[in-house]
Length: 278
Ligand SMILES: C[S@@+](CC[C@H](N)C(=O)[O-])C[C@H]1O[C@@H](n2cnc3c(N)ncnc32)[C@H](O)[C@@H]1O
Image (cartoon, rainbow, N blue to C red; front, side, top):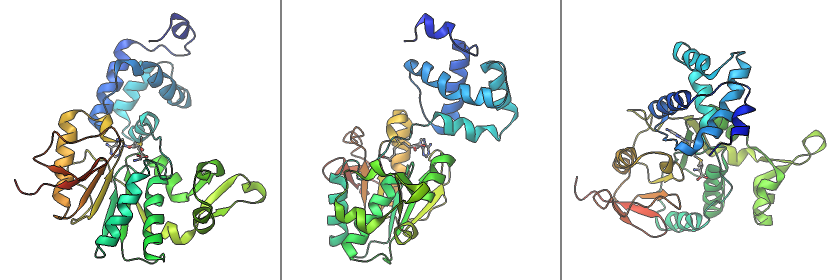
């Protein structure tokens, strides 16, 4: 809940109706459902856009958004939550390694909500380690709806603290340490960068610019922002891209045990496609 103090100190007027309009537009554009409690978050993230455009209120901003389609990307970038880290939920990377060893014919991996790149680069590190080289014939496609995080991902530059928890060998093999004005930063080595192809894809779009089969789909910590109906529609579309022995990897709070018509559990929020009822 927001306090009266917060409301009184606000630079721009932000009415309940403005919040509802933001939620509706965000849902239409991205499928993201914002809870009632997110009004302060919306205010602080979008106030920057209202200021940058020299507008006087959220009502003005919302009509600007309606008449300027080029503002939509800024609107989306401001409201997505991009929290991620290298080797987040590490058990999935052990599963990935085992899968690669058992399926040497693996050709394509899709990381569907790759945020700032830590997840697809972690996937690429495991692929490179498993094969003992960088030039592996596996395509790693990483996508996100947010153009800003994709730029950061493509640049592959991170604060050194982001790799604190990585084993020394991984730090040495996969990152350059910044010097001079780049002190405190690390950069992913170009060989690793080349393994990942970044693309902007809105999961809500009717068509994805991808062709199946895709052996492994990482779809972690993005479904939680969608409602149940959207989750099941997307899961069904992704399952269709997987071969019979493919793998769908979900985030820690995204269980699909209730969707047995689409997937079969493979352990640790990981699923096999269930193609038997097609
Ligand atoms: C919390 S991050 C998860 C990052 C990573 N998968 C992980 O688990 O660490 C969620 C990401 O989903 C992206 N996202 C939200 N809605 C999306 C949509 N409709 N299509 C594609 N990406 C979306 C956001 O931009 C954000 O980068």
